[in-house]
Length: 288
Image (cartoon, rainbow, N blue to C red; front, side):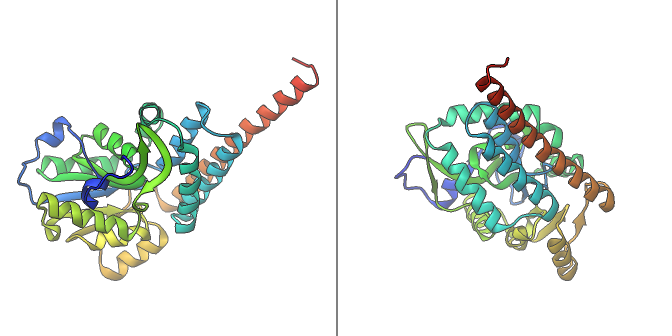
């Protein structure tokens, strides 16, 4: 998004994707399904895996990767936290400043093929496919950059993506946002704007999310559903009578798997740093 562009809110956050499956959805459909991405479609935080891919291509320092690994571990164990998300956002924008949109998009393609495609919950994928087969529009709604959301939407064959817009000028990121992070109430506002633009009947629409921060978007539609919910969303869903779909393994096994995966990811990041420090010391001492 160029700085200074004057577009409506829905145009700013919505990226329509031309895919063969989405093209089969009737243009006059009144029903859409809105899917959160992280821990709803993809296991873990997609931004963390993108960060690993960017690190491998020299975008930032090793200590940044360790920081992202800690954030990923905390997210997998405790769920989303607004302060945590703001911290990651600020650092990510700083890292992206001066890099080209084309470069980041190409890296994201590789990250999807190598990592994200293997982390898609089969149960959520089946649900998404069922909506498309029923002639419903399907949109991904994520706090990650809209370019990443659009990529995932294209690979899954959905109608498009709503995402956070990182400002860019002449094809290069400026390190600033257009508007705010697409999170919490901002997601619901974006969905309402999109529904008004496309003619969707929100009372007939569906929404899926995993976190208590998804309550606004779930409350905006007639058919909300919690997928792989964190503790607070599970409690809220029980209180208001929302259905819950669990596509992880049994809860105890899931907790063990989350802890093991998070610790493994953190250990990997720390090992990368230690190896680099070790090589640097050997070079300074004149050893091969």
